[in-house]
Amino acid sequence: MRALGRHAARGRAVDDALEAAHPEESHWYLSTIGTASHARGAGCGTALLKSRLDRIDAEHAPAYLESSKEENVPYYERFGFTVTGEIRIPRGGPTLSAMWREPQ
Figure (cartoon, rainbow, N blue to C red):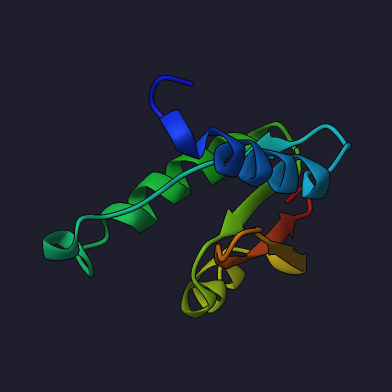
C-alpha cells in the first residue's frame, strides 16, 4: 500500500487480472525476465530462460508466463510456449499474452 499510494486500486486491478488468468494446474511460473537495453542480443535472457527450462524439463513439469510485449511472443514460442489467451490490464494498461508450455 505504501509503495502504490493513491494507485493502490490500480495495483489491485492488475493483480486481479493476472490471478484470474493464471492456470490452476500445478506448474512453474516464470514471472519476470528482462534484459537491460544495452545488453540485449548478447544471449543473457536466453541463458536465464534456458537454465529454468532445463530444470523444469528435468521435472517433466509444465510452465506458464505472461509476455508483456507482442513482439516477444515468437521468442517464447521458440522455447515451446504457446499463447493460450489475452490478459487485458484494466485502466489503460497493456494487453499481455498468457503462454503455456507443456512438459518436455
